[in-house]
Structures are given as structure tokens and as C-alpha cells.
Image (cartoon, rainbow, N blue to C red):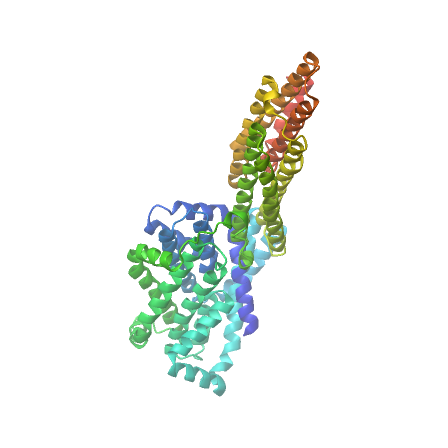
Length: 548
């Protein structure tokens, strides 16, 4: 029995990984497009959960979007109501006898996963393998549970639970919470019922408990996150508990009513699970705005002055859901980028106004950026130990590379630019030549533009913006070379020019060039994957050689 349940959970995991690897970006887009109204959000949650076969995974994805401000609590609650109904559709399908196709799915999945060149064919193989493993697991559970029908000990336990349905609900909720899957618990209950090892009333109570238990893992997983991320799982948990309190006194009436439509016990359990969740959706969809306000009162946004100086979303519990974990890491890297960008802005304000205190404060900000980098690196290292697909592994490396480049930029600002300014005791900038000041400004503004564009490219992977960022690099190189020539000409014309100002000028130009190079590196994997990088480099080489 335990082996069958373990195989069922692993099959569910395989399906989820296969779907997220193949259609992860489409899933994120679908959730993002469901912002406009509650009905679109509901059906988005339903469809995504049918694909993922996990309402918990959908809940964690939704919480991640709300924490980033892409979703508000109300449409997020509608997504979760749809996710609850989505699990019932999967349960309905799996109640049919599909054992004959299990070997075919396993064999096809292994062949596609092993011998494909990668891409969606390999992901589809993983998906088919996961479904085949689930069907095989149900057969194992069925075979293992048959003797339970004749076991006096098991029947005594189930009989005691039948006398206390509240205890039965709590028992099933604990199982679903430990398994991190209400669907697996529902399928287990259906299998036990089909062997007549479980009384129908107790089975219905188990289904109610499974619905509560399935809502607990997302709530626990987001406890360390911002209040906006915790509000949707809390609202969904309240929905389910409220539904259980309504349905519990009506279990006997519901059992009699459902028996009129189908005499098959397994089908009755699946129908009860579906009717329960559809009823929840009908009752609570009109009330999601009120529930959103309630969760906001229960979990108000906390004003934490130090929140911007530490990572907030690197929750270890989300590591089992790589897509959610990558979104969290991406979000923290963006916050790290905002800190480094602020350091760059402060540096030039300090240079312009000879502000020693601002320069020292900016240098201290580098430690904040380093803390972000260390936390993200540790988080991604732990994530890499999980079973990641090709796309997830690639994205993990891209996030790590971009964070490393931001950390290098912070070091350039704090170690080179700030220290050189302080070492020269902020030489009065008014003595710098007009040409030197103009050259610095002409390079500083393009770097700021590249900074914002690189953050955009990092999150979107947009090819056109990546090409624009790379084109900006070549324009910057020309500007930097011209600025150096201008300064050398100035030195030839004015031999009395302050050598410390000259060194400061050349250092700033060099550091800006290095910063711009680090920012541009985000484009290379994107353009290389699209086949644009080689043609661009070849074109640049030809121009350099004078062939074009």
C-alpha cells in the first residue's frame, strides 16, 4: 500500500515537471492574462490544474504572482477556486478502468524521454511516463487494499471513524497534508471504496478532509513570504473549511442522492468530490471581493523599514516546485538590481556634488547587494539539487549568471569608483574641464539606459530588446573611445591640468565601460539560442576588417 501511494505521488510529480517544462511560459502567461475578471481567472485555474494535476502547484504559482504585484488577492482567489475544481476533473478521469493502457504509456514515455533530442518531445515523454506510473500505482493500491476488506482490525478502525466523522475528516486532512496532494488522497479513498473496505459515509468524510488537507501545504509554504502572497492560500483554506462545515451535516443525504445517479461506489466518491468543489465555486465566486478584504485584514501588509535590505521570497518550501522557486529567485535578483542601480546613481551624485557622506553610504550599500547575492546563490544551489528539467536548469544558470554580474557591478562601484573618489578626497569637480564633464555625462546616461533594459531582458527574454541592448553596447564603445581621445587631447593642450583629476576621469571612463559590459552579457544566451549572435558577430568582424 505504501509503495503504491509513493509511486502515485512520484507519478504526479513527473506529470507536473513534464507540463511545467513544456508549457511553463504559457502557464505563466495564462495566469497573467486572467487579471481582468473573476470568471477568466476561475477557468484559468481550472485548466492549469488539469494540466499540472496539482492544485497545490497552482496555488504556489498564484501566490508568487500576487507577491510580485501581478495579481491582486481577489482574482487569485478565483484562480484557486478553479484549481479546486480542476483536481476533481482529473479524479473523474482516473476512476475509469485505464489499467490496459498503463504499460503502453510507460513504454512510450520511456522511449520518448530516452531517445528524443530534447525539447517538448522529451517533456511529453516525461508526462506520459508520469500518467502511466499513476495508473500502475492505482493497480498496486487496489491489489494491496483487497485484503483490508476481510481484516477485523482495519474494519474496527474504519468503524470507529464512522462513529466520529469529525475525527475521520481530521485523519484524511493529515494524510493529504503529509502527501502534499489532495488528488492522491482522493484516489486512495476511491480505491479503498472500490474494494468495499471503506464505508461510503466514512469515504465521504475522508473526501471532505482531503479537501482541507490539500489547502494546507500552500498556506504553510508561504508563511515566510509577504502578506500579499499568504492571502490567497488563506482565503482558499477558509473557503474549504467553510464548505466542509456546511457539507458535514448533509453527508447522509448527499450519499443517498448521489447513489441515484450511479451505483458504482468509486464513481459516487468522484462525483461527491466534484459536486463539493463546484458548489464551493458557485457559492464563493460572488464573494471573493469580501474574502479578499477579510484576508487583508487578517494578514495586513507590514511596514518593515528593513524589508528592502533583505531577500523576502526565497522560501525553502518552494524548492519542490522549481517553477515557483525560479520566479522567487528572479524577483530577488531584480530587487538586487534595483539596489545596484541606486548605487550607480548615488555615485554620480556624490561625484557631482563632492558629497563624501553619500559616497560612504553608497559603499555600505554594496554589503546589502552582497547579502542578496549570497542568499540567491545558496537558494539556487539547493534548487539545482532537485530534479530539474532542461529548461528549468537553463533558467537557473541564467539567473545565477545575471546575479553574479550584478555583484561584480556592485564591486566596481564600491571598490573602484567610490574608493578612488574618496582616495582623491573628492577633488573639486568644478576644476574639471567642460569636455571631461560632458564626456562622463554622455557615458553615464547610456549606462543607466542599459541598466533598465538589461533588467527587462532578464525577465522577458525578449529577442528584439536583447538585440537593442547589444547594439547599445557597440554605440557605447565608440563613445568611450572618443571620450578617452578627447581627454588625451586636453592633456596635450594643457600640461598644467591636475593629474588627480586626469586619473579620476580615466578611471570613471574605464569603470563605466566594465559596468556596461556586465550588463550586456545577459543578451548572449538569448541571442545565441535564437541564432542571432553569430550573424551579429560576423557582421561586426567584417566591419572591423573593412569588408563592409
